[in-house]
Length: 184
Image (cartoon, rainbow, N blue to C red; front, side):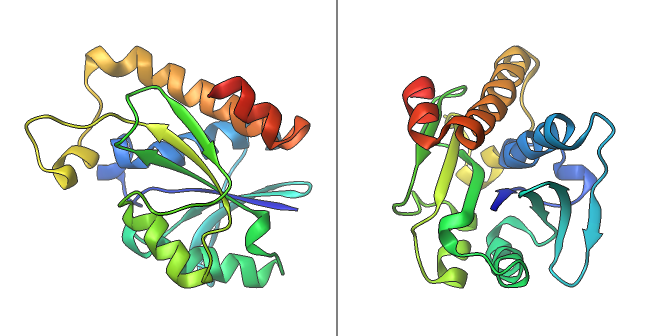
């Protein structure tokens, strides 16, 4: 069984921001793996929206990004999973817009959502699908990650969501190595 968590912030004002790219990818995955009209059920006890397709559980934490570990650790306990069963899909300002990197463990890269997860589950050994959102030149990091993509970036965003979804799907069906080789 795999728990695939897309990181983001809840609420309409954050819906299409750079920090919510993880939500965008798991939304697309839910349409492909569950059904085109897939709906998310709100799990207030475990602080997440959840959709399920067989042995795959998709989740979007209801906590804000910096507290993602609360929801992730609750879901891991509830479904009796190990951190090795956890895959996290998130934004990465250190990668150019459109780039995808898949890692099986490692540090936080300064990402507060990843920091929260590592603190909550007490290990950094889980898979991360890092999606490049670039780095703003003239803004603070916080303002940049909470900003919306520009019209000029719309095509690249669509490409990134499509290819990130495909990377997760290939990792599920053919293995992480195959996905890493194809998308690095």
